[in-house]
Image (tube, rainbow, N blue to C red; front, side):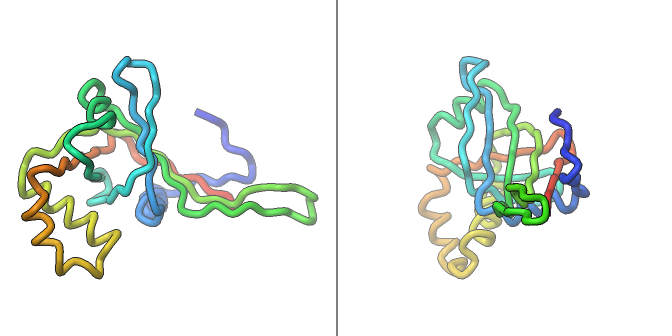
Length: 161
């Protein structure tokens, strides 16, 4: 793991989780089907609790192929990123809040859990349209894949503010 610079600060776990909650998207990194090539994609991911995250996708595609060949995943998020010039030091820098976490991914089969995950996603990203949720789920649940990510280690959060 990379050493932190003196100006960086490690964050408590709760703050690292909060970064995942505030980030407009989270980058999901996977190991490609060939076992060596990395594959990363920004997604709308929602957190259920301290260890559980969900996202949804189509029933086929590279993400699912990767997960089916290797379920290990890495999440990374940035909730703040501001370039800055420190006049007193005559230095260019970046103020940021970021979080990373490792976990395992699995396709959700249980109907009730799929609906719960989709509800969490909609409540996070489109809360004012929840009155349309039941109808949308009824129309598209069978052709929507939900993936559950369970963290295998505590998330790591860092910042420079």
